[in-house]
Length: 447
Length: 112
Image (cartoon, rainbow over all chains, first blue to last red; front, side, top):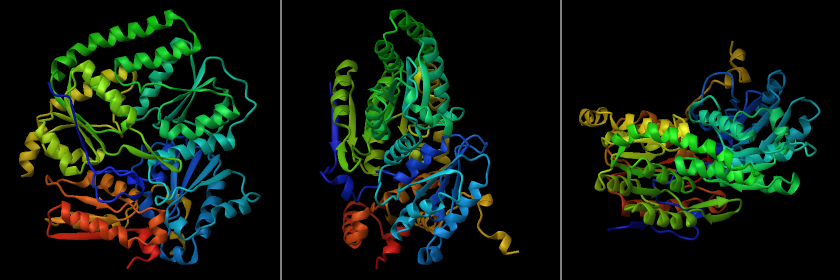
């Protein structure tokens, strides 16, 4: 029997800083990460992108008036020559008049940073002329290459600036840090289930950073008695600060995808708060319910071949969930295994590789592991292993469909996929995808 | 009339607008045997691929590479990285044309 077959391409110590020559590494920038984290907040927050209009072309999460809105100064050549602070000042004054806005966050871009716009001094000067809270995050893409850096900057700045120190702690309560989806939109619906199950267990969800956060909720962050880390890259600045200043410890729990990981997630919380074994009975009843429903999906999914291409932190948990659904994981692709955490480059997948080896032993996992692959190597591997479904980022969706292969998003997920009902929803999505005769016909049509 | 159209926050919120960069990418993507090199920070590559994935209807693989500029490159010059990238690209990919698209950052620092 074969095991894991690693194909690692040209890893250099300074890879992240000096990277060039691969087309399959989507870093994004810290501005996008910061924007994404802020956009999931409530509509009393206004985001101002101080840069050209091309930097404001992200897809909006929804058009309802429930989440933070984005404004852009749309800098042009003239602004690069004569300075764009006038435009920014006008926009801040305009937003300051709006009664529905409590907080204005300015995000800088490569352009505004390269021409040296002194936004800190501008805000200092405007302090007595405006009534709304306002701060700037320096998020130019040339100095912050990773999206999670932006998430981290947003969460840590909000808490450092606006959280009250003297709040009384709520017993058995948590902050869930490093998750960004509005509660009522796409994968954000997972947070309703988290809230409900925690409620049944007698644990209070104090806040999700940064989903559905209003300005008033940020002040209350220090009331939680524990911080639960969802994404270490987005949370590292916050959890250490809160531990030192608010005396709130933190816990890194499994990402709750699949039955085992979800039960582990809640069991560890029950153990931490000492809530007793009767609470674990609740988890068992959920497991039984999901197992019954899953049998239908498993008949269709059984022995289908899958490829997983997600971030290193989530890979292990998602692979485990797919194996629980009796899929065969044939290809695992890591676009990158290094990441900038603060100022240093860190290998984030070290533990993931060790744990993959453990999974291999437990489930007889036989798959190809691609690291820093080109797109072509990635597509070739999918073809060679006759993969039926691919978990990948949105950018590769059309290409995978055109190859006649089913596709499920791994980042901007359409449906809930965390916790118990999320797992059922994941199984349903995969079943639907695999039953689409559309893809192969589509491929023929394109030719 | 023109004064009414001046910049203001009322109309800025709804705008999801593209720049030359995206238009150039769309046009170049249609050319056969063309390798596209983005001389940009990594954020621009991520953004363009994300947007393009909504429009793309082709079933042919096309490489889109980026020099992933960082602050060090802006200070010491971006040409070395671009040269290295082009050599690497020509060695690795087959194509009759290599097109380079720049974005705000290299244009502001004035790459020749």
